Image (tube, rainbow, N blue to C red; front, side, top):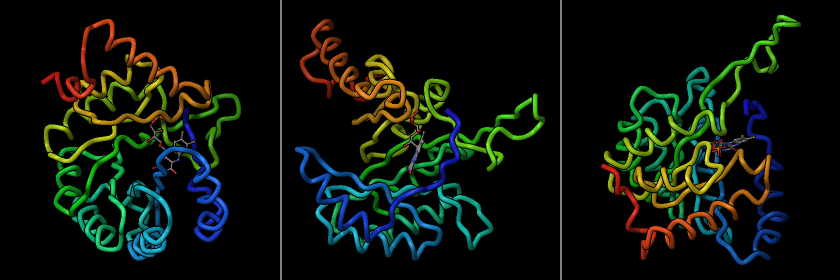
Amino acid sequence: MLNAIGLQNPGLETFLERDVPFLRKFNTKIIVNVCGHSEDEYVECVRRLSEADVDLLEINISCPNVKAGGIAFGTVPEVAQRITRRCKEAARQPVIMKLSPNVTSIAEMAKAVEAGGADGISLINTLTGMKIDVKTRTFALANKTGGLSGPAIHPVAVRMVYEAAHAVKIPIIGMGGIATAEDALEMILAGATCVAVGTANFRDPAASVRVVDGIRDYLERTHTADVKELIGAVR
Ligand SMILES: Cc1cc2nc3c(=O)[nH]c(=O)nc-3n(C[C@H](O)[C@H](O)[C@H](O)COP(=O)(O)O)c2cc1C
């Protein structure tokens, strides 16, 4: 999938008043994905969310830094470290830093957010892509570029999870093109403690359930007592 939906959302007030109580009806954890267009905006969002009934905050640093001419916060290690530290200071909940794959060294970015005090890391966000419509000779997306996700990016994501897992001690949530249990198991073997499913939900809303069932089958088939034995087992 190539998307440029931006960070469409109802705004913090509506989210806190309408969406959190709705989500609380379900017997599960709530992880809130946070973005901002300035460092102060990140901190302000985290400060408000820290008083809300939510379990974890995931800070998306792939957003463009308006003050720095649109360069994503998550591509400069010092900036990523500083945002992490400031979010940690403002947060009551554990803070997960969501890394961008559009960097030269994912290990450097992982180390930077660990040094800033992150409780965990999630990766990867979408890879920047472009689609040109040859019939109309225009960009397929009005934004020109979009974020590439789904099965095409899975091998890149596995490689980056592996590199990040070897660079830091904090736990990793692996994502990027997971559609089957095998995809998820690759991530876990590469070093992910948790996995997440994004794009596959568009094709099959029950994809996550299939992934969980498939992991259980694999554990039984291979006589593996605990899935934890698989975390980072491929070195
Ligand atoms: C339509 C769409 C919207 C997304 N919005 C966000 C977002 O708001 N924040 C974020 O951190 N990542 C966002 N992502 C990235 C996904 O969370 C995920 O990191 C990425 O798509 C790779 O996983 P996947 O291949 O399973 O989708 C979005 C992805 C898609 C396809």
